[in-house]
Length: 221
Ligand SMILES: NC(=O)c1ccc[n+]([C@@H]2O[C@H](COP(=O)([O-])OP(=O)(O)OC[C@H]3O[C@@H](n4cnc5c(N)ncnc54)[C@H](O)[C@@H]3O)[C@@H](O)[C@H]2O)c1
Ligand SMILES: Nc1nc(=O)c(N)c(NC[C@H](O)[C@H](O)[C@H](O)COP(=O)(O)O)[nH]1
Image (cartoon, rainbow, N blue to C red; front, side, top):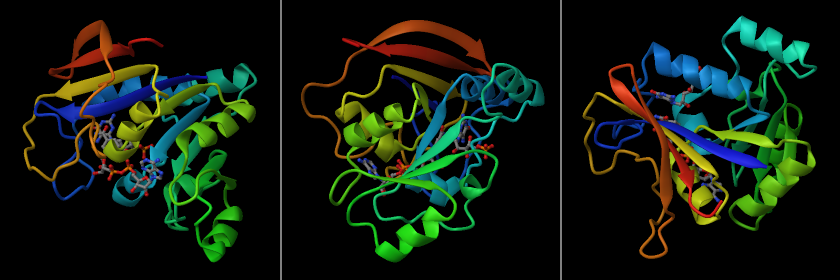
């Protein structure tokens, strides 16, 4: 399995504003790059915080890219995965439509009635007692044949993936905007590291959309 985390941050490192609603940091070029990365992936993963804030669809937008996937014997869209300990994904969430297979990763503690509702629209998998155990969940995804994984946020999930040692590569678009706000989500939130910080090696940098795309590999992977 190979895990790429992709995110767009403001020049001051925020994923969105303190209102936590969707904020366009990327421009057209970066969104087109994200679309190509989705098309190259077997699954696109988000945390339920992102589903609740942004209601993303997580499908490939460019018809030619979807056609190319079909020509290669793949589904038009990659699978969608939401990490959702307590089954908070709303039934009308865009990721629960029939455009692609959707996996909802729950913890043992997810309410039974939420499981029953979600099971109508998604494949459920369970890992962890109170919180999704990411190592367990990702191992199950791999057993399902999902090898090339793209993560599209948010900050809580990205931190936990680094903490679990699951990230191979980080692609960060840094856009030309200051967002500010001590409570605004950043690329890696959670508890934060105080020692044994994951270290990165810069592989590439490219100018686009008035900002810069940084491609980092995680040291030791
Ligand atoms: N700019 C970007 O590229 C980008 C991308 C995605 C999201 N966002 C923004 O990020 C914000 C949402 O991020 P967030 O941090 O609130 O939510 P998130 O998407 O990281 O989801 C976090 C939630 O996932 C669940 N979870 C289950 N197991 C977990 C585990 N082991 N570790 C961590 N979480 C686990 C928990 O319910 C937790 O609250 C929104 O404001 C959204 O607009 C921005
Ligand atoms: N690459 C990127 N640049 C941004 O400026 C931004 N705000 C996001 N945010 C990720 C977020 O989850 C978006 O909501 C999905 O990228 C929407 O995906 P859809 O079009 O619904 O498939 N992602």
